[in-house]
Amino acid sequence: MKPNEVQAKLGEAPANGNGKRQSQVITFLAKYSVYLIFVLLVILSSLVSDVFFTERNLFNLLRQVSGLGIVSMGMLMVILTGGIDLSVGSMMAFGSVLSAKFLLDYPLPVAVLLTILIGAAMGAFSGVLVAARDMAPFVATLATMTIARGLAYIVSKGRPIPAVNQALDSFGNGYWMHIPKPVLLMLAVVVVTWILLRYTTFGRMIAAIGSNENAVRLAGIRVAGYKFATYVITGALASVAGIISTSRTGVGSPMVGSGLELDAIAAVVIGGAPLIGGRGNALHTLIGVLILGLIGNIMNLKDIPAYPQQVIMGLIIVAAVLMQGRQKS
Image (cartoon, rainbow, N blue to C red; front, side, top):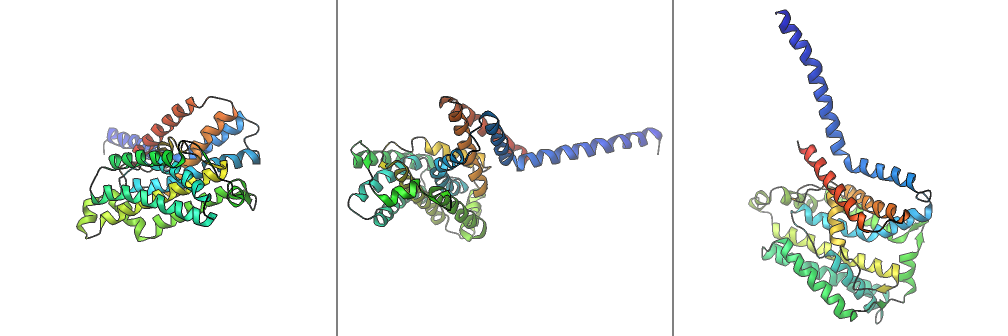
């Protein structure tokens, strides 16, 4: 071997090694980007405010995102199939109004059950349009969004409905083992969703549909049934979020949940799930929810208007999507 060839090979080895290490670093950052963003925001929050790590502030933060966390689990399932649900914010408002309305005539367990069943029925309406009628999810859920918000105003006559119930108030503002009860419910929903997606046929099927719907259909699997189920679950969870809102505020309001669908989609995307479907994780989505909550919390602690929150949220979504692209490459 000639000297220049030896020198060339010796020179290539470090370059290749450096390139491999850089690739590994990029892959690591892409894989754990959601955790890195979360940790950085926690550090930033602790630096900008002395009250961030107080028990009161942390519990308020978790209580505020509990409804969003529950809705985001349903949104994750829909997005896994390659769909989207724009109706969750309006469904939350409808659930809030219904729960307060039913409490005027029925005991709490009946009121809660009826509210969730109606929410599931509204989700089923979207599911039929998407799965059976092959309507675009964007169009179908946009229609459901308008209908649900309109029904919320009709039922409430445009005014908040007082929800006077000691047990409901105790749930919304109470604690169990020093943890807010809505937070415990959110964590329970997250755990159930994680198990459902990771260890059940249902979870594997909805992810497969998002990855390659035609292949799943050719395998003889009822794609429509799985799609339909995700919208039913999302409708039910949105109603649960509405009940939580009523329990926290003491009124059923037709105005709650405005823009919630965008926050839920953002949480899922920040958590690493692509909007084309096929991939997603309940725990990562929960981190996405907490990231959104942290942004709002930092702004509130520094008395910054709410408008910049949208800008920062958009930038974080862009960063998360770019990191996803790095992971694929």
